[in-house]
Length: 247
Image (cartoon, rainbow, N blue to C red; front, side, top):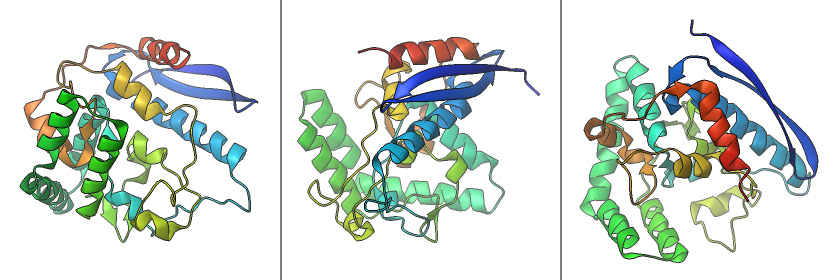
C-alpha cells in the first residue's frame, strides 16, 4: 500500500472554526492521487454550509430516489474525467459495457442537436452567464439521465463528481424537474472545490470551456491522454490551499 502523509488545515467558515483532516500520497502522483482528499474536503465544506443555513423550516430536498438533478450537465475538472473513466473500467461485465453504451447514447443524442459544438462556439466568441445557463437548460431538456443513475439514485455515490456533491436545494423537489432561478433555491457555498480545481489544475487539453461535460468523459479520455505532471501529494495540496486563500 502506498504511503500516505496525514495533514490538518484549520479554517474559519461561516464564522465558525473548521478543522480539515486528510491524508495524501507521499509519493509523486498526478492530481488523481489527491482526489480522495479533495472529495473529503468538499464533503466537509458542504456539511458546514448545511449546518449554517439549513433548519427545520428550510430542509434539504435532495434525497435518494429523486434523480431530477441527475439530468443536468455535470462539469468535470480535467483530471476528474480520467477518474470517471477509471470508475467505469473497474466495473464488472456486463455492467461495464452497459454503462459505456449509456455514455455513447447520450453523446449521440447531444451531437444530433450540435450541443457541444454550439457551446464551444459560444465560449470562443465570448458569451454571457445567462447564455451559458440557457445552454445548460438545453442539455436538461434532452432528458439524458446520468449513466450512473439506477432507480433514480446515484450508483457511484462515494465516487460521484465534485460538482454533484455541491448541488443541494431547499426548494420543493418537484421544482427541479423544471428548474428556473425563481423556483429553485440552492445552498450557496463559499468554497466550491469543483470550480477551484477546474481553474487551478489543467493541461493544454482544455481551453474553452474549462471543464469536460461528464457525458463526454469516456469519449474525451480516448483522445486526450493524461499529461499531468507528477508531484508529491503535499505539494498538490499546498497549491490547492494557496489558491483557496486568494481574495
